[in-house]
Each structure stands twice: as structure tokens, then as C-alpha cells.
Length: 109
Length: 114
Image 1 (cartoon, chains in turn blue, green):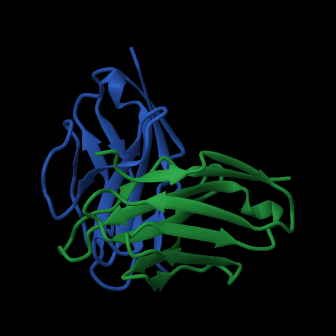
Image 2 (cartoon, helix red, strand yellow):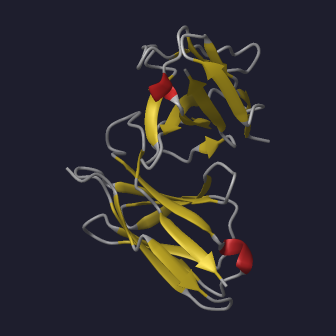
């Protein structure tokens, strides 16, 4: 079955601490992986995708096909990073996305 | 560019009624997808429209139907509403003619069933 699992419902860290939001997936084939973010009172927006291999707002994510994971990392969390983060996959960008249940990241000073 | 726009913002219906939700895609996009997001869950794919036809469909009953117009806007129709249909309905658009272009989401329509 095609599935995205985000094991943490809530992750609370202090400002300046490292952050890792976990994402594991189950998919037959070679999916494309995404991280979407929803800040308070804003719409869901794309944060990054694995094929881009870029850092957005200090966040990076590496696709590990052996462990079927796509964890989101940031070395030093900022208060403005507080948001809901969703991991998602599809067989190609623009086609049906399968989302995880999301992880709320709370960064406090 | 206003991006993806959805209407209405909120809607209250009773069981058994029918509802129509509307979506205008981001300028330049020709593909529209619909998602249902229940409270505490991630969005769940309903279906996708391209060239006025349903191209992909998720695991939703036939009570959920849609339409895409020549100007690429789209409607989601739900018949015989159930309490479990209460959710945030998200529309997303993309440009399918260009490979690997991600989906852009609207703010959603909050549907409450009484």
C-alpha cells in the first residue's frame, strides 16, 4: 500500500536547537517526495522536493531509498519555523499527492 | 497573481443535501486537483481534472463528482451529504504540460454538515 508516515504529531524545540521532522514512506516504484508547510493562517505551500536538492529557509531533506525515509532537517531552529509540516509523495509532480498526517513544529525562545 | 482561489470560504449544510464547491486555478495552470482534509489528518486526494476530463481518482465514492470548464476552473459536487463529509476541501492546480511542476494549493472551503 502507498503510505506516508509521520510518527510525531508534535515536535517542540527551543530556538537555536537542531530540528528533524521524520517521514517514512511505502511505495512500489520510484516516488517523488515533497515537504509542504502551512504557517498559521496561511495556505499549504511547497517547502522543498527531493529532486531539487536545495536548501529552503535553512531546511534540507535527503531521500534515503534504503530506509524509505525523507526526513526534514534544520541545524538551528527559528521561531518563525513554527508551523504544520506535511510530507507527501507522488509518482510524478503534478499528479495525485499522498500526504502524511503532519507534524506540528513549535519553536520557543 | 492571486494564486488558486476557492469559494465559498465556509459552508454549512445538512445531511442528505448536495453541495458545489468552486476553484479557479493559478494563472497559467491547466490541471486542477481536489483534496479532502479531515480534522487532524493530512489532505486526501479525491480526483484530478485535465482537459475537462477526470484524469485520476482517489478512493472516494461516486457521490463525489467534479467538472472542469474550458477556462480550467473546476467544481466539486458532493451528493447525499453525510456527517463524515465535514472537512476542509482543498483545491490545487498545476501545469501538466511542463514536466514535474508541483501543485499550488488554495485556502480551502470549510464544509460543515449538521
